[in-house]
Length: 398
Image (cartoon, rainbow, N blue to C red; front, side, top):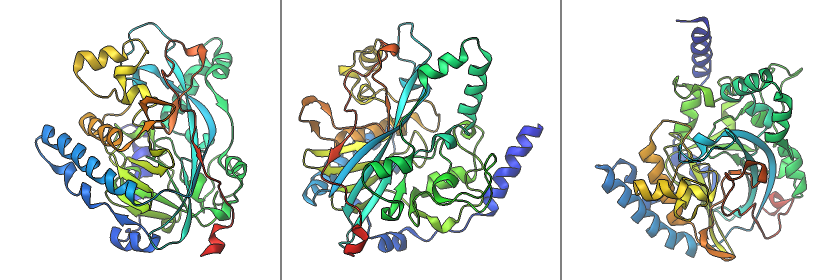
């Protein structure tokens, strides 16, 4: 075993020793005013795989009817956080068939949702509050930066593919909220996320001078049990995409750990969408324009609707292989599960009033529509989401 491998093993073992047994999912859901979604019970266990896909599609069709009838969220607002580089081959499962820049830029987008839970309590959820400094710690990005620094013109290349818009705390203030307004935060998965920078840590993060304070006060992080378990005990094939020390010094009571698919209240659900990672989940919300879905199973609508794509090779990928989707394929957990999950998302999403050809799917990190990356630019881009008015002080209504 190499010294590097030993270091990783020791770090993972230390994090695992700190693990506190999570409460059972039923108790958690009762506590936070959420509930499970019975329509999806057992569908991810069905065999053979063709039957599983049909069962997932049918369950999503059935659940969507009830989901819509239950109501809408109070308000939702997105704010761009940062643009980060990403390999083209990963973004479209090696489908792009023309010479292009090897890297494109994805825009990380934070979404604030206000809703009423099933006990009638107003709640504020922050989805995808990415801290760029934390993402830079993940081995994939730290190694990529070292490579860029070595090549001639690397500094210029960084300016082309990197862009910073708003840190999460600034993004929060832009929608009129304070950290104390936030009840929950969540990520669709924990790739390149450092929970210490969101939830705080009793240990000093290397490079910092003092322990981190929580970014959103007493807010808890909603996380699928399988996703948290992955970060606690990384496999070598997963390691490059996670911040392996991201749990050191974090109070485990700050995590709200759930299983399967859950609905947080009328008009808002977190659907388990495994494949990209084992614990991946997607945000689903009902708005005046119908149902929206957000995740990183794709980075543009071209991934979910390749038959409409103008990116060279993506439509051919759909036609040649008979696939309804073209996945964001940087990980190897289970491509079939990811396919099924993207069908689950497509089935839940409504069409866009502005152009009914396209679904209301908003990638949590979206391919930047910048001409510098032509022809690898999104065929259609929502560019954000906004409904209603985000209000500070909702906790005072309880």
